[in-house]
Image: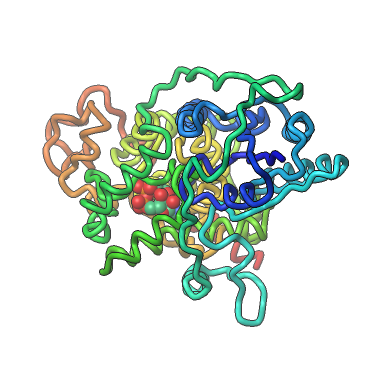
Length: 459
Ligand code: FAD
């Protein structure tokens, strides 16, 4: 008998509970990946290329036996199952709005042939929807969630590797959708991290050896390599968070705790999105529907300047250029640039979120949309709206020597030290080629607060 293992956001062979379920269900397994145009279209070239690299490596790990097909999963998955005579199709459950609907459609289509879609595990240590308040119902604030999440606990990593299943050679299948090659990389401006499971695990081991103990003191300094860089690997499931948590449990200290808390944020936002799928596109806090925002030509032009990293505020511009240069941005700077768009330019958070999703190699709907909403004040744990990031003091505090700005803004490369954060104060004037600040932060801060009064008035 043959089972199908359908990979999605779990492009790895280690710690793979679906392998165990498939090996229990049948003598051999067919490994399948579906290139779904509905997902590839909005994902942007950086993420597409990273995905293709992960698929190539996964195919190698499976001895060249990964079947890649293209099309709508509700159409192609049942056809593959039929072609190999499978009774079960194994997946890790998806909790995003699109993935859930897709899987329901696939499940329905499979059931017409008497085939079962078996969900084992998820991309999270604790599946979204599991952590509940004492009296039932979801948490709306992070800290109590993270406590209940830790109390809930998680399984140990599943001890799997490529040999856990006997993989069927896809060329032996009888009919069904045509196999395609993993597409060639698309042209992309950014230099991307090495894709795949072995690169992800290598990076994790480096971080455990060298970075984790300084994580708490260095994680907010964008000039340093103070964070793990695991986000793209977590996004595509090259490494499961269970594996990270099990390794962390071998270490002690505040930095280890701080890192675990970041994993908990990822799980929290997945839980929030699962329970409130509308929050991917709309304000989580509906009161913010009353916030007056800028639209029209002038706002469009300002949005473009923000995208290009030509706002005249060096830390903002450095961040936006890092996004283009690496398809990644440091977390502290993500917060600064997001605050600038929403509270200095008064442009809706979802425009910024969409731009991020097009460029980020780690673009993840739950973490991105809720990271944006956190900054905008309309999300869970809303940092009070009136706490508005000052791009100058944020720059001076978190990039105290100015190294991060100089790395990404060559026009300011000759300005020494933290003076780089206020180039308009330089004796010789603003260095050639660099713009003057596009807005006056103090004035925009007042404007943002006045706009926020409308939200308060409507409460
Ligand atoms: P580390 O500091 O090493 O953290 C380890 C892991 O914890 C990360 O890989 C990530 O999975 C998780 N994590 C850390 N911080 C957060 C957080 N604030 N929210 C959720 N998970 C977190 N993260 C994404 O993975 N994809 C996104 O699309 C995304 N968009 C964001 C947009 C905005 C406006 C903001 C403020 C944050 C966003 N984040 C996003 C969260 C965070 O910036 C990144 O996870 C982090 O910068 C990734 O780098 P790292 O792996 O080196 O992080």
